[in-house]
Image (cartoon, rainbow, N blue to C red; front, side, top):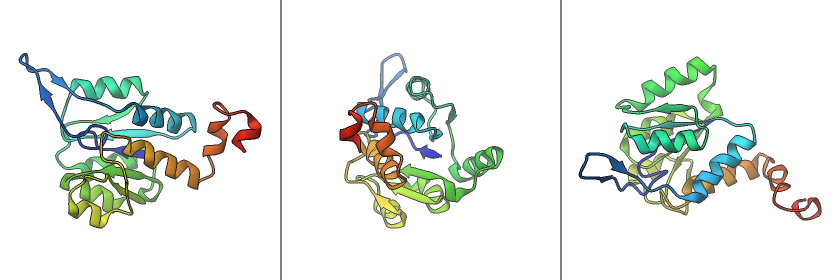
Length: 167
């Protein structure tokens, strides 16, 4: 399971509030394709965010991310309940965050990740800190890292490279 914060991880953290009250968010294509690769590998993903937002729900639907938790003010409690429902252990989860509300989840899961532009306290407790900032391919970086380290990357590459080049 890969769980992600949204603002500051899947986006650069900028939230544009339009005159009609609607929001605009910018998502990076590399991250989106990375999530598609993750799903293609048969792995599940979830969004866990402190804000409720139509762009987040739309992006989750586009990427076939079925587990979306919005308006989470205590992410750890929500996440623990979610894992219990799925019968997953925290050790089987990677979580990517950037700010203090993510810190309890980062410390709880098996692989806690901070994006490059995360606050210092989050970086200090992360198992991995990305080289890319949130909203600029950091999620893709983590997905590639995990898929390559678990031996799943080469199989996914056969779609893009001839067999002799993928191996």
